Image (cartoon, rainbow, N blue to C red):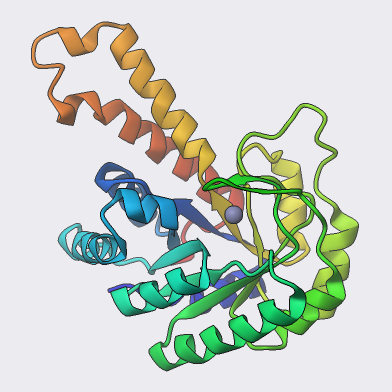
Length: 287
Ligand SMILES: [Zn+2]
């Protein structure tokens, strides 16, 4: 059964660790992440962007696949199925499709409109018992073709959104989606501390977890970050392992072309990446 992210994130905020959100792209991805979470006794959030959902034939297909897989693999750790950077329409569709958590990314709207739309979605989410993530201050880099500037969120605006009753809050603190550039100045801990002071025990979300140094991750967790999104890192690991398999000519040997063999090293690489992150975030044995 899929659960809301509320309970696992409240526990993480109080316990000074973070739960990883790992984005899924297909069946292999989902299976690799779920098996790793179960093995490590870690709660987990499966993130799905609207683009990835479209690729996987829609929100209903995704919700059905994940629910069935949790049952078939006998997964006992808490699993939340979460819409990543949802539009208002996408959020409505996910609530309908059986997602247990949604993110409404209203960061590109004026703050008043972000508040109005967030309020409406909170009401619907509460009725269904699902968690809701809101975003203040665009997060840099590219997410499904939307390029943000990597700004730092205004702590007062964060408080306004937090007070609406969202479950968790994503705030820009200089983080970027995708690979970080060489000259990246790092996370703005002053901004994070100021936001944390305003919003109290509200779990904060760190997007763009790929390539942020471990010491910065740990400091961010100590300042209230309770959910960390990882996407690009799994993609890079999968691609590198698949490339190595093909370059070694293994797809040409015997039945090495069998997709179950061809995709196995990539799936193993995702498992190793997820394990590394769960250990770094401190979510192991927290299920
Ligand atoms: Zn993001």
